[in-house]
Amino acid sequence: MNVYALLFLIAGLGLIGWLTARARAARFDRGPQKRLHSLPSQHGWYVVLWMMIPALLFLAVWNGLTPGLVRQAALQDPAAAQLSDFDFERDAVLSEARRLSEDPQATGDPLAHQLSHAVGEARSRYKWIGTAVAVLLAFAGGAFAFTRIRASFHARTRVERGVMLLLLVASLIAILTTLGIFLSLLWESLRFFQQVPITDFLLGTHWSPQVIDAADPGASLGAVPLFWGTFFIGAVIAMLVAIPFGLMSAIYLTQYAAPRVRRWMKPILEILAGVPTVVYGYFAALTVAPAVRDLAVSLGYTYASSESALAAGLVMGVMIIPFVSSMADDSIAAVPTAMRDGSLAMGATTSETISRVLIPAALPGVVAGILLAVSRAIGETMIVVMAASGAAKITLNPFESATTVTKQIVDLLTGEAEFDSPKTLAAFALGLTLFVITLLLNIVALRVVKRYREAYE
Image (cartoon, rainbow, N blue to C red; front, side, top):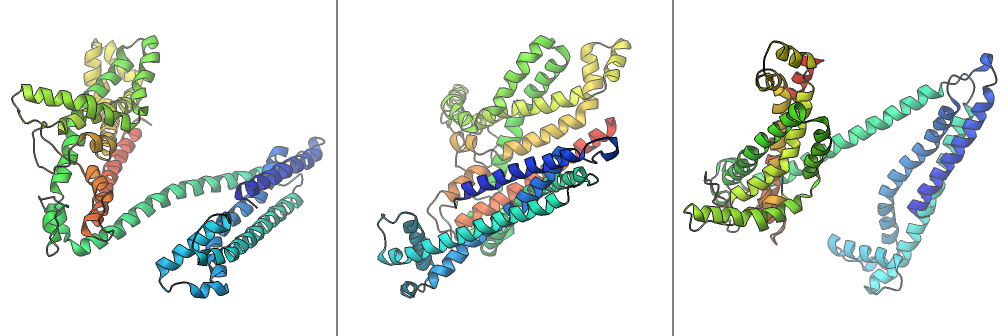
């Protein structure tokens, strides 16, 4: 049976179980002396959890095991004796056999055609086994839960525990995903550092992955210019735009704007946060970069590039403004009103209250927002891919070309180099370094936020 049809069937069984259990529990509630511990609907949800969770867990595991079982079944077919001893060629034929089993009219390798029958039969057999076991588990779970329904049964407690367990699993999925990303980066990075000394990578000032000396690959893979470009564009130029404009807009919206103005101005400002980054990239490449180049020429830089660090940094700063503004807005609004009223009652003006009371009090939250904004900026990819240059330089001139770590990762992984070459593996080392930097920034920001919350709880 198709997976979606099976899921629909299990959901239908769960609905029937919910209605049946609820009706059975409702019949128990016939007076004050026979009151149920839990509501009838909670008894219904208890049965639903027992019907659906075991069946869905089994399907998740079974769908992971089925490809291996089908492969083993195909290898036991007499025609499989003609398969190559090389894993890659064998997998290619088996993959084509799976495709032909779904579309027998398609053309393909003759050996794959012979194996497609065995593959099709195995897939059908294991699908029906999975369907039968899942339905049996749903019925068995439902029957077990249904027999436990009685007036004194604590269904509400059991359901709440089940929901809490689901929430815990959801949290663990996010954590395990982060751990998986880190381990995958770490594994490939270790392969890179077996070929290139880590000191050459972290301290080297020459980045030229197009020409790598096989005898000394580290000489061309010094990442300092990339880290500098990332810091210069994302943490300096972008923040010079985002911090003042974001902070000033937050002060205006929280302290000066009329409620009517705030109602329409704040959503409009936050629209910037929803604009796709590729649109910002187009804006940077087609509008801001030519304007910055013309400005540089007017200032005397005859050979100014249209792929300058200033163009990418300006647009990135505009993208970050809503982020800084929102965090500063929340931090200023969280300052107790009594502090503001007390300052005004002492004769201070509104501007003095903002600069001497509200901003210092909200500073931990504002700093945390800025750190998160820096983390967001140095990890941005699309704007720098479309507007920044690929030239790795250490420069303080914003009109000159510069590149970033994310730009180089894209370039390294979209080339035609072999996967185990230092050029390709360097992308994982750059990704791991960027991951560690952003992780540290987020940890620092969370510690600042924690301190801020402790001060006003």
